[in-house]
Amino acid sequence: MAKALTKLVVLIRGGGEVASGVAHRLALARCRVCLTEIPNPLAVSRGVAFSEALYDGKKEIEGVVARHVTSFSGIAKAWQEGEIAIIIDPESSIKDALNPEIVIDAIMAKRNLGTKLTDAPLVIGLGPGFRAGKDAHMVVETNNSQSLGKVIISGEAEKNTGTPIAIDGLTSERVLHAPKNGLFQTDKKIGDTAAAGEEIAAVAGEPVKAEIGGVIRALLHNDTRVVKGTKLAEIDPSGDREPAFTIRDRIRAIAEGVLAAIQMRYNI
Image 1 (cartoon, helix red, strand yellow):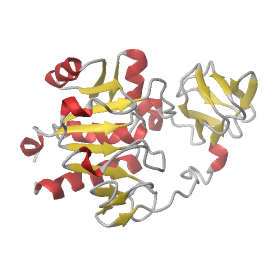
Image 2 (cartoon, one colour; image 1 turned 90 degrees about the horizontal axis):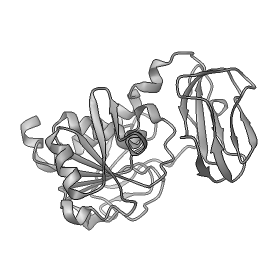
Image 3 (cartoon, helix red, strand yellow; image 1 turned 30 degrees about the horizontal axis):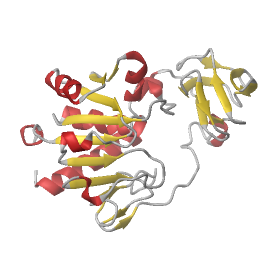
């Protein structure tokens, strides 16, 4: 299988947790992967997001490296080094130069932000906002249900529930959102501990406090401008740091669904 996938060029829109999990799996299958991102990513699960390479030059997740590049030649060089390429390109205009066999929309915006059925021989949409046969050739289910990772060849993915995955029975209490528009600032890092009621960040000077105690599993990059309601952080009440830097089972299931869709299309 790996040999058959080696020559496939895959463009993935997005650089957050889901996009990165898919990119990681396809890189292991020896696809040539390029991620496209916005200039100031809003990923909070930065321990497992290749978008961090835009700040640090490169990002390694479970043995796979993504490198920030700025040109087509940079993409080619990253591939030669066995790396994933990630480029700032909100419109994914590099697609015309790459001529990918596969385009995957992993922005997770819950709506289609411009991906078209004609973008590549195989277009895959992740989650709500895509209809198989209209916006994408196939859609992969991302909702944390029994259908997680299912390849949809007709119809749409399940509607977004809006409820975070429960950890130790806690859901919405774990997640912090911006109370207003403004500049997000924090001295905390992913993996740090926080006590219930502790201020872990501020938006335009307004404190953002943890509702529960635990490990900071996800945290927006410092000095990012946000709008009211933007997701800022997640607290893991289990107290375990490892999940902050490990691909979640849910993301692995989505990535396996994407791989299954590719196998279906190319009879691999």
